[in-house]
Image (cartoon, rainbow, N blue to C red):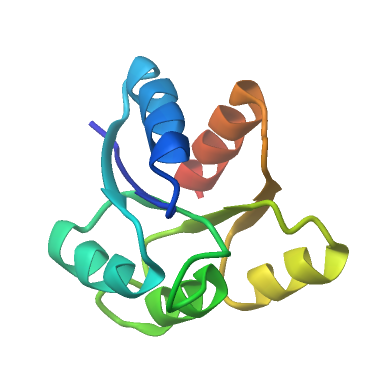
Length: 121
């Protein structure tokens, strides 16, 4: 079973995305902060990470950079999902190592299609 780490400081968003993903057959783990995402990813080795940008402490951009530069987590693809919808945000997110950049609220079909595409490499 594919395990997805959802990193978002909103419990409501975590619950919504988690329910959607579990309904589609994915297992989920959750972190509320970017600074705890790295430790969780090292420990649990998820197959994919969904990363918010605006969080207390370490931003999703910073956490994505840390994850993609760390040899223990560099192989784990990151998809950023954020309310930041400017082209400069998307470009910056991809430059930090994210494989895709989606804007909230993304449709279920687009989210699943993007996850499947990224998992296939």
